[in-house]
Image 1 (cartoon, rainbow, N blue to C red):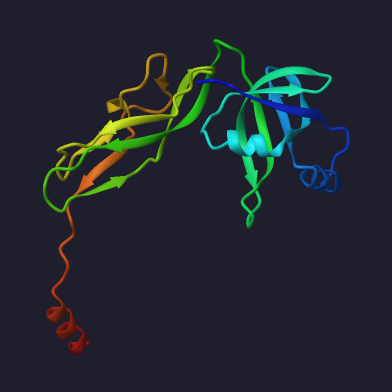
Image 2: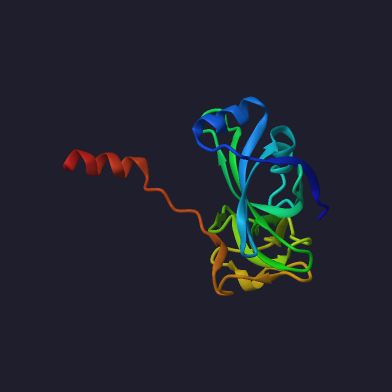
Length: 195
């Protein structure tokens, strides 16, 4: 995964007023923490950050004016409830070669066995440990030909090289269920009349 370069500046004022002013200036307030360092409060360019956050677990190189560069990943993103614009971001400092624990999307491919079986997704994401500069964007699993009663557990997922599970291997991720038989409408009406 390539890193995204964004510019930022250190924040010297705090509170709602300064956060609103930063947003009016097309900046997003954020905090950088990790590796035992004191937290750094920053304002990050808003448009570039919004584009970068479209990629899950994106690796960002923040060029902080007057304070050097930090390699970070977004850890918590807060969005405005109505506008859905980014209102605050917590960043975690990472180093090249360091392992990080992240959530990765589980994507299915293929078709179930013939019939009216349904795929029940128990986990949309799976927690994995990967090298900070090689975080996978997704884990793909084949459901081709699976019949009712089949299930896929975390240990069944094929992970990219250098990536390991950070959850119990027996954790169910997907399962195939048979369609539920509906009660005939005539019987349901008759039972309702008796009550």
